[in-house]
Image 1 (tube, protein in one colour):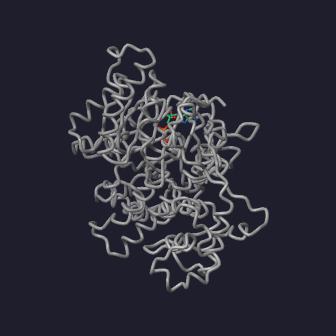
Image 2 (image 1 turned 180 degrees about the vertical axis):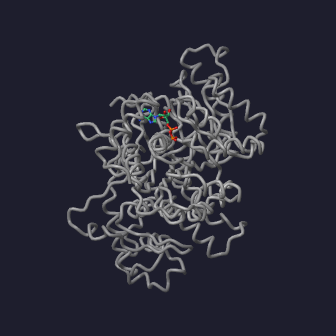
Image 3 (image 1 turned 60 degrees about the vertical axis):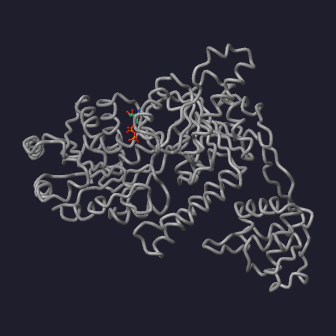
Length: 563
Ligand code: ADP
């Protein structure tokens, strides 16, 4: 350990100013930097673009020994190294693109203490040559970038990351270890700490709020979605946007229909139709590389304002002036949504992220989940573990769709950063969201919720939602016989209410903690931690209404980001 917090701060700040010209650390950066400089392991969870690199680059300039940066992307190493050398920090990389002679040169420079940061891919650590080298040079810090790659439960597992722990153990002196990732689920975080062997790490989660984005969730029947999207695009003719769909088929049909519908809408407003170019291009993994490349170029260079895409679109695409991202279907996780929606407003200008969803999106996701992983070399048990974890991710996504809380806060809290959303004096979020702006309508479902809760009690918390709905609606189905339905006080209590409405309220009650639905192939409805509230005399319950018309008014207002 070197110095105290007081003595460390100014040096780090000085280095930040000296090399990068920045006057202050961003929230979170300083804590990570101080921890590392004092010799404490660290885990930094920050979204892409939040400034993770600085967190190990600044310490690297101050620590006595060298810093090894483990990074999975060989293609980015050269850029990072060039950028460092440009500001006067000596850096190099060792990777497979170099000849043995070039590698020898780097080793020699490092051994003579002339390199501050050395970038390597994780595979490199397993080679004898590198291990010998590493045992001969003083190493102060090992920084692990994209650290979620160690976790089998993350999205980009790399088996070579599992060797990092062994590499650290084999070093003559254990350096400080700092891990960085943008993925923050609890499970992945635990894996990073456990598998890399971080010792009492200082954990920093920060920067997940994107205060220039306006978030909006609209529940809408499928048949209205396309016309809603078309009118939004027609109302914003000079803006660039991405529309994400769940399947390739949907991408193609939506792109085609938008090109017709948006043109008609704009012509109806008095525009000369012959002067309106292509509105939307399709993009998905099933298209040829050439077609995809063309679609991407047309979009990035603003020749075409809208791209309709599957989640295959976005990786490595750098377009800062995307003004809106519309999700035509609900994504599989908050991680996926955050990443895709986050492609809006990279330039910091107000932008909008709208999610359209309905119950059938949920059903589709659940169905996909149930059949997922069957073909992979996993035992039945392992498959179930993966599915359970995916189910949790999905439930959080469903919660986002249903919540009436601030959407910024919901998201930052999900990433482990409670209170991370910037708020104004009046308590509303800075970026703005449909919930803080209260732009949704609700319906009173107090009686239905009470009946559901009583019914769960009647059947002793032992059946699934399908049977509860049947009991409440007074069904004569045979499979209810064993429950002796006629003796249940709630039998037929909601015979006038539609099955869909009852299911809706039940799902919402589970999201809000009044009920809890067990996971697995035969989900059982039980009471949640808030169940007692439903019998209180002042219990009142509302759910969000379904949007039936394409609410063009809402698409216009509130003016993005400004309220
Ligand atoms: P990440 O690795 O988290 O994706 P980067 O380290 O590439 O993010 O940083 C993203 C951008 O933010 C870079 O242009 C970087 O120079 C800038 N940046 C990082 N820290 C600061 C800071 N304290 N002040 C101003 N700009 C910063």
